[in-house]
Length: 257
Image: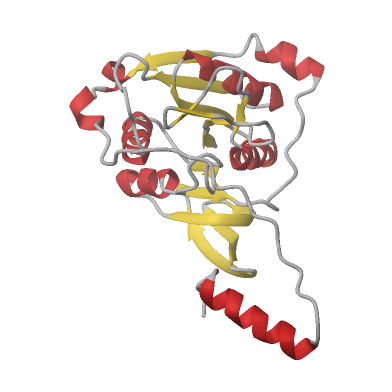
């Protein structure tokens, strides 16, 4: 079984993020595999171990993304591909990433593609479905269980606190939701083996794409942190007086009534 994982390098949101001139300052920032993509990597490894085949992780970005690809290899993936866009794409968006990934994947033999449900830096959840549409294969998002029997796939997906069970077939793209599995930590032997596993670096010219074909369809005007929360107010006095004061505050200050 040929299994591909779409992986993204993201900021570690557990660390402090600073904004400079309307952009996230990368100096001193920590980068990790997008946590939802870790579920995808883990599930891909489990599917391979159960059904045979190999797992290839693919990312779009610069050379700094090699660290995250090596981490996925240390977890147990077999191969990695870095589509380096440093010299060709100045400001990409979800369209850009999906176009590049689908162009690469259309020439591969694919049974299953996994990705994270969303990226924690952007949260759009667009790339996976866009790739599936461009490859003309079915897709199921926010999955919490995956069962494969031959070419038949039974998927459980999260739907607003409930579950939905879908039966479909390979080839298929799915996006991983929290609860699908518990991603493993790279072991020391895994880290040593990852250094010898193949990591292929290509550019968009190698997949017959021009810069104008992957030009972003959206533009980020500004990035800013949310305002600091103001201290709450404690109402005192008789209950009727508190209710009256609360209504006034909701109307005059919060402007919600």
